[in-house]
Image (cartoon, rainbow over all chains, first blue to last red):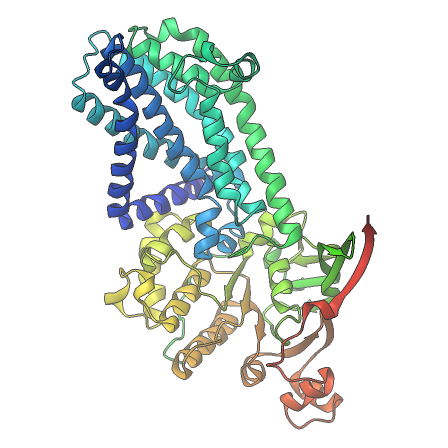
Length: 272
Length: 295
């Protein structure tokens, strides 16, 4: 009975986000166009280098860059949805009604996470397909099931980290959302988003070991460029599982502490 | 029965301590809230505390309607936000049907709902969409809410052809009706109303007031109404409280309040109790005291 109530609550969170996507459908199209344009400029770099006399395997480098751009878009989607847990609700003024509902916070955040994964996966898949078509990319050995497995396992870690950034607008109503984007940028910068982590300075290389994006990018590139199946990706999957097992409880704890802080200082209300 | 009368229960039966008829709906003992902020005073940082609610002790009985009067900044909204678990108290306790607002917050949330001066919604979503997901947060399944939402909106005289319009297209009165529908959908045992009729036209105001009376009379709901409207307080409430600079200085029947202050109207009693009018605003700094500074 209790479980059913909680599943109903979780469905409510997903339902609300689906309504919002439908009502802002044209904005979704506009934002997708923006993501497409920014990814296009990055992926075009390989052809640009070749045009200026550089010698490289254009197909391979283009695919490496495309995977980086798609993972960036995927992570952006997840962080954006989770940060909206607080930011959008504060702006609309619904935050007080959501936080005074008998919806356990973990269920609330998991609901946001479930929607974030579905929404971001759809966008990322569409982005990948459009870009691959535009660049006539040949991926004869690509193992998409392996890539999907890596992304699925990585999503758990991303949700955990997203919960931690979601609390930022609760602590700083004015700048919290931007801090979330900053965290996303830093995460990808140390994880080899458009390059191999081996080119990073030693301190950043050390940090990259703790970032789930490092293993996500490596695993997806192995699957799509090298054709590695899920079985051969264990060296990327197990760190992702460990980081996921730590980041979810840590994310819930950080969010809880932020909520307590907001309730103590009267910040759990509209317009900060 | 008014046109807004609710003939059948809006939601399923409540259970647990709500069934205990002797238990007070709200019981606060020395409930207190202060807000702290750090400010630079000269060359040092000082912590300034402003008292939002001084230790308040009161009971609201089951089925009772209690109105709290107070100027802007007097602590009315702080009291409502404490009881709806959106603020943590700095001292004292408050129980809602026996559930402590601090340690048993989820149980409190199941039986409390609220309507405030701002009808806050996702403005691009329709009334039905806003109500539908909100119902889910209270464990109401889609099949149940699909039947219940049109029923409640109809009882609130909300036009059927506007149910699927974005909220931003609706008048303030209509939005406030949807806010009431959101609260009624969950059949709250305790309804916290924070200036629910402020800014409404006279007709909408009467409709909302009629509905509150129905909720109280027919659904055994306990109502805590914070208002600026003295006539509304006198019309709806069994007892009237006065909050002034965070202090609950009176809580009794309107007639007794008038008698105590030798007044013929509630307004005169309010003036006598507070030395000011309801529309005056209290500067929060007036309730402030300095704490320990740090260099």
